[in-house]
Image (cartoon, rainbow, N blue to C red; front, top):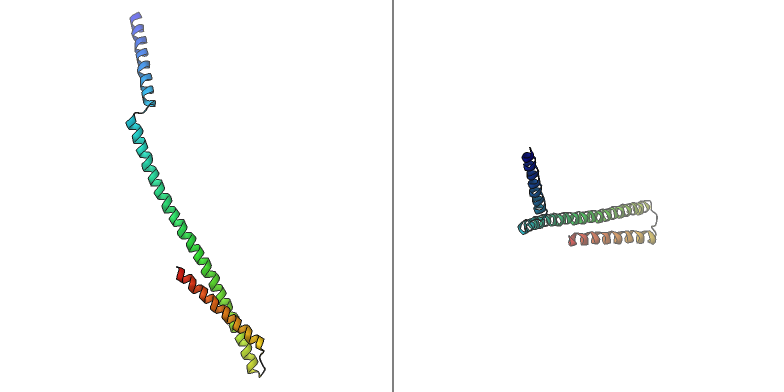
Length: 132
């Protein structure tokens, strides 16, 4: 029984030593393992970088698209409003003429100013198209 106890204690002690050596060895990776880990990190970082670049390109495209849409909407609204004002002013002048009344030079000048603003808005729209 003493021998069995002694053998058991020695086996237990040997097991503890082996376990301690393995635990110590596994906490210290080899140079090859470290380099493999570094290679995996580089590969993952390059993949992430590529995804970041792609996402940034998409964001820039969307920003440009939003800006272009806002510019077009603003110019289109401006042109439409000017056209409506010009048509109303011309109809008013035509009604005055049809009734035999004289038309003031100021009213004619106002129509000319609206037409000039309309031309400027068209030129701005053309400049917008040219930069695209």
